[in-house]
Image 1 (cartoon, rainbow, N blue to C red):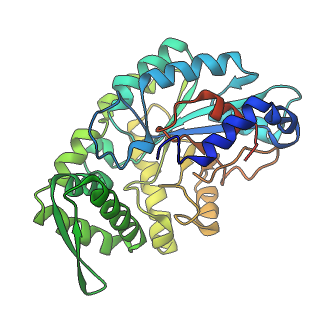
Image 2: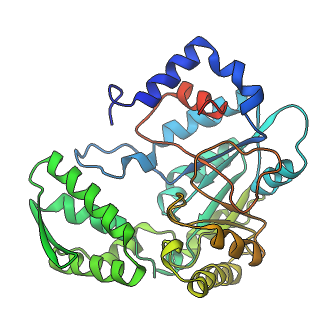
Length: 335
């Protein structure tokens, strides 16, 4: 994505400059906003970064927090966000900062900023990851495509070849293979990524352990009164691909493992991946039945008064954008 092709960002820039967002904010702005981030780390120079949209820099997070403190929003915890959704006060809207994935760079780069600015935040942990048992297959796929000039995969009993010697080829292959893997039932996904890793010399277990926070890392911020630690299942599967018993087990085991490791049992949940294709109304019901106060999605939108607490929308910021004007227009409910 470039500024020349990101038409949404361009339209939002124009809307911000024209002031149109101000006219719509009162009717469309809802009770507040939940912002979703995944990784926080310094910018990298590599030409092939297929997951760049899921990263922000520490500098961006610093700028964002300063701006949020100046904008007419209250930065709140997830508990307070839920309270305001159910009993919305007159006046200022809320914004909640949430971080998915449980990666170690949160400790290195996000936590010092959040602590220094004294703002509340929520981290959603896939509970197997801090035990070194996570399988971050999306990182393995990035390495497979990034390291090789040609890749072959059997898809629907047909061997497919991808030429990946240049960036365009890598981007195409990654886009196709990521979509294919996301579409597979969990066992088939595991088999497919294991086959890729074996043939293209990627150690998925070691890669996942190197990137994930440990429970010792989590303990650094777990006692902070501004920190909320929620869960995101045990193994971070696509819940829509599991039957109800397996989906319930994933939520319950993630909840139990986290409760055993944390000072307080987790009260909030985030659906793995969280887009509309990755979970269903069944999973919303399961999250409610497991006793979670809330469940966050990655379906974009503002949070309206009286919203279903177990299917909360979030604005997932695209880290390839740097304009806080675009974010401010998005937070107005313009889209």
